[in-house]
Length: 371
Image (cartoon, rainbow, N blue to C red; front, side):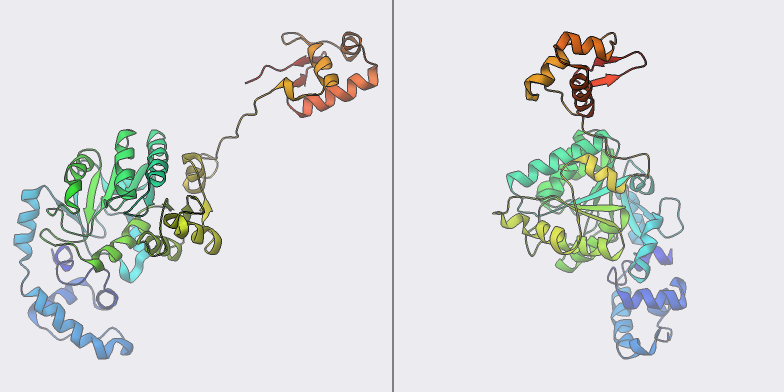
């Protein structure tokens, strides 16, 4: 109960609260806040500001009714998970002091299970038609392959990612910066309902919490931490998606970016990630899965080469025309049919074999069918 209410007491991601909990324990911090018990600062470095923060937390705590919050959550169909619960994603422990104290969730799917095979897809709110198209193609293909898309539920790239994942028949996770009873942005109220039916909505804020600029920035660390990799589809130089990318790098998650037109300011952030931060260039779902999938199980398939005899020179076409497809013939037979000497036939067959036009069997040569 104490941990479930901590998110209503402190600002999510507050490092000072995190260090206090790590030093004294969640129950001790909660009692100090609610019952005005003394609590030493977790380190000398924090001593000067810790007392001020403790007074601020204490003032906020007096306005919080934990039992009423949980009752409100039950009425909304919202469940709460804390570290150690079965639905708690263990990868959030990588956030250390910035780990959330509790998660509030609503939806048909289990959050921990959804995130086992997931990819974060983020980008600009003011997305271009190119960005929306690239996002739709990418997330739809990921969904067809059973991958869950995690995003922030905002306008632009986030919304396109959630819709494409749902259309592809997979679950999707929307990480919100407000309480689950607050539909923000308002225009995504129906989208959030669809996400709840096929996936899960998650936040670290209790019901009734309104969104704020700080909350969006803090929310981004959860998007990066929940998944093994983050894809930035489209981002300007000051896009919040770059903040998510920064968290992904700090957490040693795979960072990927979709290139865009060099003339587009909305892709300048992606190009910077590719140029300066060693992001992996991805253009389709196979590229993404190769980066975040299991070693040996999710390798990108090799692209088949289309055989086009028209691209061959006249001599090669004559030798190729002398070969059957169902049976094999010897080199001498090929040379006679193509009206060339034996050495020329053998040399030309080697070139054709290297190009994938012919193959050698136990009893001779034959032409390969174009895929």
